[in-house]
Length: 332
Image (tube, rainbow, N blue to C red; front, side, top):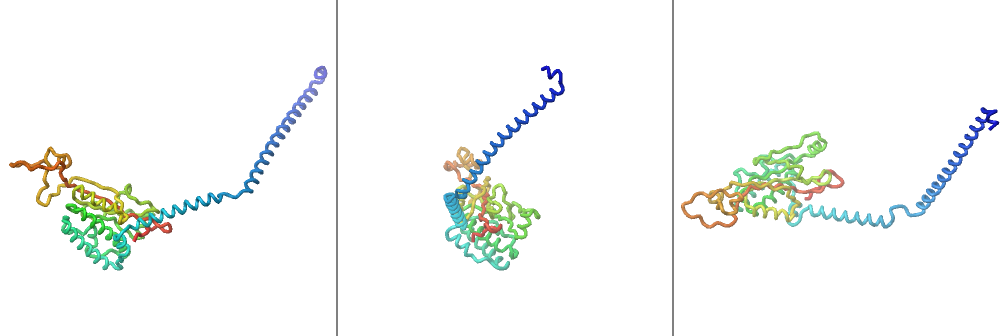
């Protein structure tokens, strides 16, 4: 204490140096401990690396076998799906073996023959048609399509023939129309896919051949699933609709029903105006007109009247897209 008082500056310097030395010693100790910990971690990682290098690389034989088995199951499922989408039975076989017309003149006569035979089938089934009905192909009443569109139009004609035969077998009262989608050339499809051309929009009126399916109900998946849509409008009872849908459900062709629209019909029966259900029957609650005044007592009526309705059914022919191309894989 006396030396500090006699030499305060020197003593202060000695104390400061002592603190510095102590601090450096602590830092050296702390760094040494940290270095030892890091060395221990490094040795552990090296040991783990050596252990990993000594075992078989991933995947193991078991994992590889499981992946191969899963791939095989997927390939089998895909092959089964493709086979089912070719259709089944003589109808699908007939479509696959049909010879595609080579020239516009050839398909023009093919379509004319289709229209004539379909009119005869409608007459035999008692189905009422428009006088100039051409079943969705009125655009080719005087000439065939462009050569590039021949396979597409021919395929549409095949599907339309199947749909109309199924409908006539269901015995509706009247055919309103059959509409199909606008067939596109490869250049038009490419332009639309690139956004360089607007979509081909068809009108939805009964006098039009064409229509556009609502994309919200379409089964299309770009790059995976392609489809060709048709729309049929007819008048009949519920049994006609049920029989028609049951026929499509046999999956002779890969046709999927996308929508069914129903509205009341004012169609007449063969003998005059449609008979109106009694106001007290269930038929009056589901579309029957008021009963006309009659001087004689009305005959007994069934509990539920057969009421005609106007149905619009939209269907799609499904195709899987090939994995090696962006074009639809034909099912024929």
